[in-house]
Image 1 (cartoon, rainbow, N blue to C red):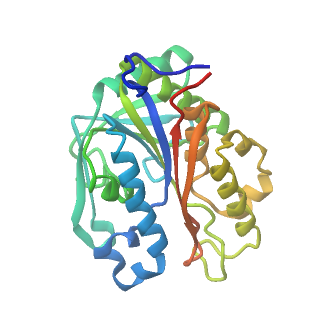
Image 2 (image 1 turned 30 degrees about the horizontal axis):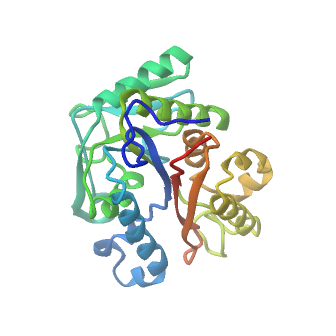
Length: 291
């Protein structure tokens, strides 16, 4: 099945629609001003994030669609952040001087809202206004700011910011499918960024306590990402997911919906968990010919 969007093709290049997706962790210690000496313990992840920025930059995307598990969470629906500009910084982590200011692709957000309404998927546009959030600068949470820190170093483009929800994994995948449709409808050359960490229970003393199943969970997710078989996320046993103490699985289900089973070139750029939390960086570029 071919899915290329509204644009024309030139020299075999996809002119509109989803170009690629990627998975990024979001520990603030990846930021040199925050991580300091601890940064050397996540050198593999830091190097992979820089390589990811290069790979995404080579595609010259017109927009990044990013889902963060740390954006405002609603049990019964998803949210897309509206407004001309979204800002944030790492003040929560003692480094307010480092942050980002991003233009919002309002046309793409509107197209996504329209498709969700047509399908009956609960997606609400949340307008940023002064005083509407807990502070003036937390509209971009660290689940967004960490990947943007690296991606912005290689290129700059508008974003669309999405939240996860308490709804089913199936509905997260459905929203991902609508993201792909909205990018095609608007002719946007887009990259989808799934922000999320894996198990938080890898070692004794880990942030969410230790479980021997945490390593099992991460091993399975890494294999799924390595092969690009994101449909296998639905096969993960519920008890394994519960034991993992993860924060990125819903982001991954949404990304699976974005890809829709289409063939990809999959690159596993890094995985490590030195502090008891699994950090995975992967890149999934859609093949130019889909039959």
